[in-house]
Image 1: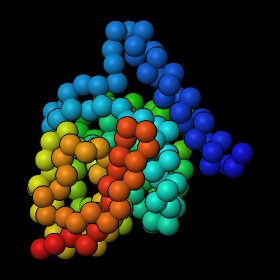
Image 2 (image 1 turned 180 degrees about the horizontal axis):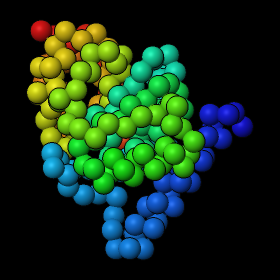
Image 3 (image 1 turned 180 degrees about the vertical axis):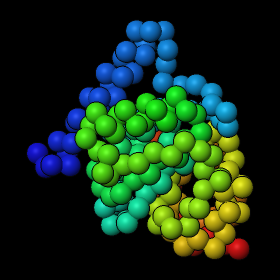
Length: 180
């Protein structure tokens, strides 16, 4: 087993235990934050997508609305990763996960609204949208990186898809070359 696959097993086991403990306490990996809904992603699917797109070829990855840090930690197995999350409790959970997994050097978390951040230095952005994200599209009009959009529900209005990937019932679409 490769190093990355072994680390993936550590990440997935950590989050499985976390979600099981939440369930035992009557909670679920889904809730509303100040700016929208957070729902946990399916780690095996996300890992598959990151391998398929060769995420390790990117300098930096930013997870917009990173929730409890699962996707940012998975991305940290491939490249430098930053998660931006508005909810302080979720951001705290993400920090704890990165520390527990020994990933503090690869993964960072910022407790903030991602629209207030300067995102143009990242060459790969990721979003699992719970509503249209037209303000983000406008903000990145001249950006030349790659945007990964998880799920089929809210495709961008002004961007052109360059690659569609599916894994089970999940999908991710890559967008580049934003239009002005």
